[in-house]
Amino acid sequence: MNYTIMLITSFSILLPAIAGIVRYRKIDPSFRPFLILVWIGLANELLSVWVAENGHSNAINSNIYVLVESLMITWQFRRWGNFERVPRMFYLLVAILIAGWGLENFYFFSIRSFSSWFRILYSLIIVLMSVHQINRLILRERGAMLKNPVFLICLGFIVYFTYKAIIETFWVYGLNTGREFRINVYLILAWINFLVNCIFALAILWIPTKLRFTLPS
Amino acid sequence: MDSHQASIYAAVLIVSVVVGLILAYFLVSLIRQQRRYQQLHKARILAEVTTLERERARIASDLHDEIGPLLLAARYKLNGLDPQSAEDELIMKGINDHLDGILQRMREISNDLLPESLLRKGLVVAIGESVRRISGTDNLTIQFTFGVVRDLPQEKSIHLYRIVQELIQNTLKHARSTLLELDLREIRGKLVLEARDNGQGFDQRSRQAELKGMGLRNLLTRTEILGGHMYLDTFPGRGTHYLFEWPL
Image (cartoon, rainbow over all chains, first blue to last red; front, top):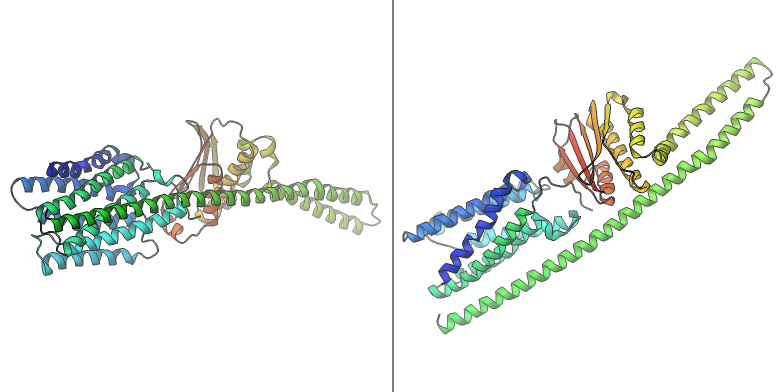
């Protein structure tokens, strides 16, 4: 039952993925990294199911996916202008993410096993970038924030990656000993994932064909 | 799960709910603050622009109705004098020319501050006159096309006219362009103004980041007062394309 729920909630990424396919040519190009990320996420879910059905661990593809996810989201924030004032910060963050991922998967631990340190690191970075982006929006957005796709996507990131960082912290402290316990905790994240995918689908539907010109008030 | 794991799981659930509540509160307060902030911002810019327009209208009216007649009266009195010599006649002619020049310049300033044609004949005619007057300055040709545009309230017309003035000034000052195309028409219940030049363009993101460009801010302020949206498409070396949409 739990496995079925996790499967359904994981594949809720189909909602934003389909919305993205339908609207790809009609939306502002600055949102493309996010759409590509959604499709990569869907491909990773499919691959994970296929690997698991064949009796193997999905650790390798998951470990590669988290690196791709962190870089794509950082790229998306760059497209939204998060690094306008300090462009070098983008390259610094990319270097930190790649170095952190490399050290975790090839030096301290193995790419064939799950480990949590990089997941905590990139979750925190994404939450901080999202908060920064929302702060920029408060000064610039003249309409309803809840209809702003950037706000919705950042909100989704904050919710999902905050929980992800908390749960990964539990694993770092060795609380993942029991299988049933681990599945139950992941179930919470799975429902949050479902909620966030619905928010992402809504955000994609509200992405405008061209971005309005704004200045901070 | 054993009892130890069950208690940890309960702790995880409680933490999740608490974090969820904090996030929900953060979200609600953020949206409320943004709404309040934007209302204040709109009220402030509306007050600023209204004061500015009132002051312009007052100065235009003073120039036209008070200074103009005084200068005309002075010229009539001067012309009523009987010159005693050719030298006096020459001086009188010089003063007359000066007065004509002052009257002409005063009419231009008054017209710039608030065009009479805008008040009497409407927006399209006023823009057409302004375009004819400026076109050809600094090698810039301005083409103005328009479709059916319904009569607009005077306040709205003034804002739209100022936007066109600002676009022309921006193009003259910064674009190094030889052609500016302006188009105004109603499309699907919206008033749409497009301006496209073949000038040098600029890096929009860096301009926004550096908070430069009073011209852009003025355009945006008036667009927002009218409840519309402004779209800007420009890149260094590729000209500038402005698109404005206002609900009717």
